[in-house]
Length: 438
Image (cartoon, rainbow, N blue to C red; front, side):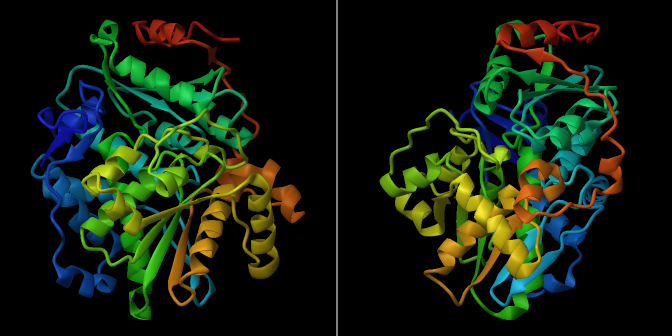
């Protein structure tokens, strides 16, 4: 399988090259050259397959012969070492929980898969790889955990100062070893801009940089598995199924739409956003006009210019009408999100995090048009990661998972930067001693 740059389809790379580079030399995101729909017999028998079998069958075409079958199956087995339960709220409303991994967020799957792929490719690579990633919350902690102590790999994480939860910041800053996190004086968009600048900086050519954001194909592709796992559990209902995805950088919903291109019988997708409504506005007006991102209680979705939306457009050959037929998008305020968290607890005894609540709001909105369809929303993070938001709303203490309790007494290694110049200076240090502690 080859991948081409979305800035110039003549710029191509193999799977391993695309994983290691992260982004094409012309700054374009990589996109698979071919997408082959799966045999219908696969979907007819999907309930008989294990999650690991589904994962292997759906991703093998995107890797080709670059990772041998047994190695790839081992990577998948290590990646999917936890559950993906489907919670029933009523006959037509389900929640797929994606927070049962080590950092309690859906991004654990992509981070674990990518780290193991990069580890495989690094076995015979004498040059150290630096993973540079921007995060609005959960990406960074998942990447830090996924790459922790990976040989020949260093991780540098940028996150917006004061705009992630306390537990998220602890997860980012307490591993040490090959993990370094910087609090950036700015927004997620500022962090992402620094990452993009580093990838095109001729002065950093001596460093083998890659990204672990969902712009990296090894982070993005395995996220399609969630949608197969959900369908597997509801296939026997014999109803139309739509899926509402809390959306920030649009990697997760882009993976869902890729699954649909592989033949997954999902009738419609909903991109549920907070007030950062660039995509909902686009689908209403056909005008793509990013604005400065706004801080919300669903901070992982505080993204104004989602990187993966260009991949979604490519999936539909840049046909606006075809995209609009497959995808709807709705945005919701913090006040409405708080009301939904309260309602879910009172009516269904379910505690949702702010992102999951936004997903449920999108599901409700689409259900108004199609009440007989089955709706699935994705619960992308454990509510424990947002204690300061959720507990006052439900007026109840949330039990701490044991491995979260263990980090609460740790000390955050407080490193801050305010400019790309400072980031570049750090990346160029040969001993990786952090010179910017406060």
